[in-house]
Length: 190
Image 1 (cartoon, helix red, strand yellow):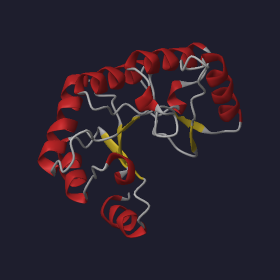
Image 2: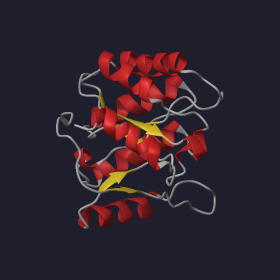
Image 3: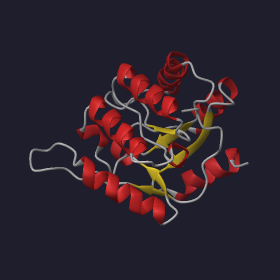
């Protein structure tokens, strides 16, 4: 499948992942729910906070993305979450999404170690971009300090945009702080 070059627009539903009694993802119910959301003209934000992505292995997440594509869901309507504590898993999930032609990826900062400065986060995101090595990659930075306890600053966004203007496509600000959102809007809205 050719990678998507369209910028994702409209509503992206944060998709929950149903699990079976044995705690494995319920693929059939997941696909059915995603098909219904798409039928309601929603794009899909899979493998984010509501999806309990960090409770699943990278292999489970990739298999679910494969299943959605195999079920006929247009990858250009999807923005899977790919950020993990492991840079290797982040790169694998990111490359997998790009190979499928997803509109972009929603990427948490490396979040296990707290008080990481902008330089460390810049190096993390840069390493992912370099290792993924695909010009079709579109990253939407995921700023969710109440959960990750690691924030994304306007200075970091500015630096990433200068280094990767065709890769960093946006930011999801889940800080719950309007002043923070306004700062991002004032600085980066196009």
